[in-house]
Figure 1 (cartoon, rainbow, N blue to C red):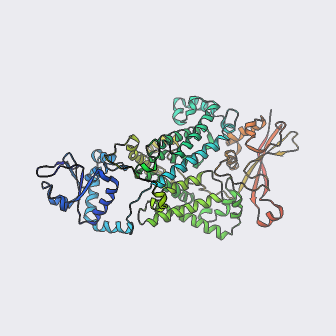
Figure 2 (cartoon, rainbow, N blue to C red):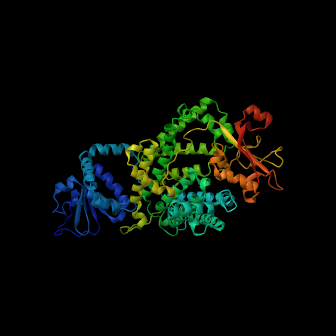
Figure 3 (spheres, rainbow, N blue to C red):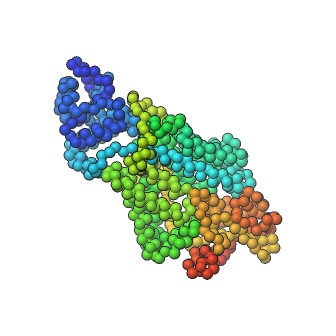
Length: 625
């Protein structure tokens, strides 16, 4: 690593601000200087060496020609890669302090970056040509003030939906009289794991494992969501919302074991770093958007979409390989809606073409996320990803999953894409001194390193390259898993080709059996498939998973049957119809049916959306005794 040289100030005017000296005849250098000027603002001065060399005669001109020079007010000078890292330390929101720390302290980092700089400088014409191709004609600087403002309002709305939806069903699901009493779960966890249980199940409910804490967690999350929508202390509130939702997930067992719950946790965690540090958000005093935190959000979007395509191919499922999966999907997905029925009626050629388009979007469009130029490339990728999410949203009920994904896509929209009147509302707060930042701002670079290292482990598992990394790496990855904040994604890796449904029936005499109807899952053949999203009826969803396995492996299902036989009103409120309003039945059993969508003629003649065929007994008879 090069040592700094002290500038002789004899015959030179004093330096009021740090100065970057560059080659004024090099278009490549001028392009980078233009970009750095926009980031550093008045904190750093810039001057070509063709004029600056006269003032700093003690620096040989060949040094100015060879590399950029960064001159500081204390008389120190650095060159090449070191000069760039020192400059970035004056640039708000890029983690320059950490990069310069790595340059000074991380073994091999300095020599590697100096070699990259030297190689780039040697072939600057070729690199400059590539940059021009990617930049296109439009060199307007990128800014994301509008997208960030809309992102946090949208995130507040999604948090509001998540907490509000769960609040309406939390007591019958995990309350003391519910299907999965969380206080018993915490007691069992503490007795089996000891003090380690607090790490394995991070939740505020440890402080008071009573039903009242459920209302406090959901109610607190609802109130804080509204505050986030209003722009009050966004960074602090994002941390609190993440903590509250994690607390609920950790005690809810299978009922909050969905990918969108994990995705909301991960988005919520990254939003802590993406949010401005102000206590009251004012568009006239906008803090500069952290490009590193924005990059982590884009990286999450990339992983979410790209992994969704990869897992389908990696599973070797024949329906994905021959593009017939969508011929089954609309009928067999957990909670179809009415438009799912219409999509299922499409001919097989249309279903195959749709699957092909889906693969193209999931596997190709994510790479356009990181294309800064030409700007139409990122816009094209955003449009393709949005198109796919809207189609999924219209033909299925996936809670807030699609809305949250669309919110991530929204962050790709530059300010120039929004109406002028809207853009004029956002004005950046001027920087008059080097930003000190807090520990969150300084921690964005190491956070990114942790996320990327864990993602590497996840990709090794996904692509079945587990042997590449030592076993200790997977143990280290396991330390973070209880927080469900750096996750794997990819729905429907293996397509379900038959729709099996569990139908609960009760009887008082063992002869006449009456069915329990659920609010949203298929049951009554003439009931129109409902639109439930963004609300998620979590019991109805779990019944879909129950049909995929034996009831003895689903402890929650057995508990549900026990609660029905005990006539627990909280649990019965989750159902659409209780066929025994005067008291619980003496006997309860579960039948196994295969459901299929009707065709157009059958629905026209009978009014039925479904047909079904009895396949056997799912669970034998239980009695109150």
